[in-house]
Amino acid sequence: ASRALLRETWRDYSRAKKLPSAFVNELERECSLAQQVWATARKTNDFQFFLPNLERMVALKRREAEYLGYTDSPYNALLDTYEPGSTVAQLRPLFQTLRTELVRLLDLIRQSPVQPQISIMTQSYDTTKQMEFCRLVLKDMGYDFQRGRLDLSAHPFTTSFHPTDVRVTTRVFERDLPSCLFSSIHEGGHGLYEQGLPAAQYGTPLGEAISLGIHESQSRLWENSVGRSRPFWHYYYPKLQNLFPDQLSSVREEDFYLAINRVSPSFIRVEADELTYNLHIMLRFEIELDVIEGRLAVEDLPEAWNAKMKDYLGIVPTSDADGVLQDVHWSFGAFGYFPTYTLGNLYAAMFYRQARTELPDLEANIAGGQLLPLKNWVNERVHRWGRQYTSAELIQRVTGTALTPAPFLEQLTEKFSNLYQLPTSPSLT
Ligand code: ZN
Image (cartoon, rainbow, N blue to C red):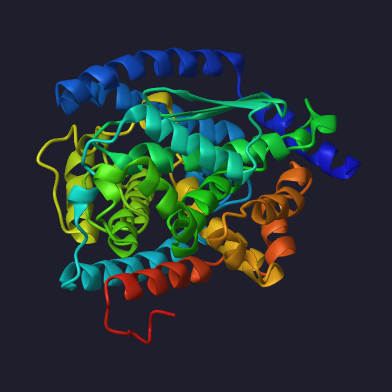
């Protein structure tokens, strides 16, 4: 443990030391300014208004990469901030495979005669009861309300002051049932990670999460592998029906299950489904890479954005507010951040598959409302180690293989082939 502590402390220290303080000040000033400008630009759908700030930000990030040092691509230096050890050389082929398969799966789904009834989800659902249900699920997941809270906020997030003081937030809309439900489960997964970190190592790197990708894997594991699964709803759907008899008593479990697993291309990343979400990420990764490596001018971003939307999702936003301006990330300099979302999905599927292998009753337990075996498994295999292992070491240690998109693609293919009655496609394995 002490060697890992030294490595991680050195990493934090040397990264911080490489950036001159004048540069850090300049970057911080531009970040706070750019965020305000971005908010106005998005509201008024005016990319030109944000352009000068974004150009300065890209120049600053390229300088940051030079200070930090890198091999092959300046983007690697930025990526390393959020996902230590990750490189363009690793992500490019990985995302390529993923994109080809996802686009293909999406095409099949779009041609399917089976389509969910979205109206199930947009009936009126009392928001207090929604929150009651979310608290129940979080409690069953093992989220400790003695050491944590669930509150409301405009954008759901998780924050931790100490493993004994973890706060997750969600949002709730009367006519959007999945929103509160899946935000709560998602943040609950982040919360479990924070509560599961070793308190004895608090204040040292060994008491911290490994990377954003691993953090996201913990939220996606619960949100998607568990929360959008059949066994989960086998147990929870009758409970939800009891809570909302007027809305759901005549809706079959099968139809509800299909509705929460709806796949449909949309403009906004944060509202995207489990499948198309990753296409939103790849678009951003490719664009960021081109901009940071100097192949794409910042002023040409809207055009590049829309072209990729058409290619990958088959739709083009009618405004930049719903396109290139939708995310806050670039305005605070978070280039290299987006890939961690998709890495989280890939890690999550790898962990879930391993948990199924090691816990043969896992899905039977989930179908019986027993979520603690999985919670204990991630506590033991992932959370308790803090930053003792790098993400590459951890995934190898837990699953016996290096990062691969295969389990994720298999999980999606299996689920959506059944749900949407897709023709079996032998290359989707
Ligand atoms: Zn998250």
